Image (cartoon, rainbow, N blue to C red):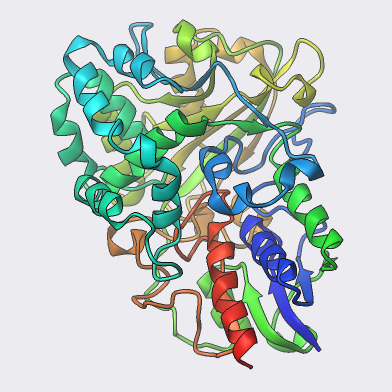
Length: 469
């Protein structure tokens, strides 16, 4: 009998398997797709030689993840590549605010009136960033806080809505960039703890940047899989699990799946019926004949580029997708240009480009034209560079990755108390009604992102049980 079986080979499932195998437990991992990866894959979606990331592309939480940093992933081929700027946010007038590794450069891009306010916001937390990151990414109660005072100070700043936090800024440049940071988790700007979301992304950039993985996000998954194999774990792909009886006997079962799928497989009935899924996304992967012709020079040097004219436009787009049930006319967009720093991603002189916008959960329309009209506002002539495009709305994303229910790439709404307390109101979020069944997906704390911490935290709960039985 195996010690543990893990279902789902996304970053969290892989991390959970690795953490258990590192501690001497026998582990087998089962994945429905033909390759490991989940939200961290790389495929030729458009033309030969153009390697795209179907989901996550830039990894501020990955490079800052306490779980990943504790593993020898570089030994298995993972290499982080950094653009000159982690992120830029261009404006219609051809200028841009930036999120730089340097706090000073970032503050200066906001203008004189807000430079000091930004420094006062982030500089108190930067010296304790590694401890702070471990503390809030290990919550709840998987570990006692190492620096409870700093964590409490962070909570006082971050738990109110982001609209409260941005009141300290006078001008629109800082407010807009920060609104874009919050929108990465598709949460309304006025939501609970959204200030913390924006602050985490900013601190992550200053601490270690927003890199891409050399060769694509698949490199993260492949490194985890190779390490797991070296530790003696086994990986089975093309193996869809429909019920617990489909799996071999084990002392514990760990699911990197949505709560909905887990309830169906394990026979939990309506146990997760109150769990809410958030907006979906509409994503376009582009093969380009040259770099994106951004008007703002800062955007040409950035790995990630946020698109939204001002904080009001961003807020309107978020409300349309999350509350009004319609696709926004001027969508807020997150874009990544991996080949600006990694030439292996496209043929010589060509580029890959990644963009997505928020739409209602399960939306079946086509947002391509609205996305490209937005891009043309900030990069005139963009359409002339397009060689091919691959589009994926909520149905296509859900078909590609079953965790993305209705196209929700966060595996659950990141809003209200569900931002922190997911998938249920409990002090043991990784446990389920069955004592031998656990959940480790992004539906558990600390939530969405390629960081492996949900898997790491769940593995702690699993190995405590295994040592007791």
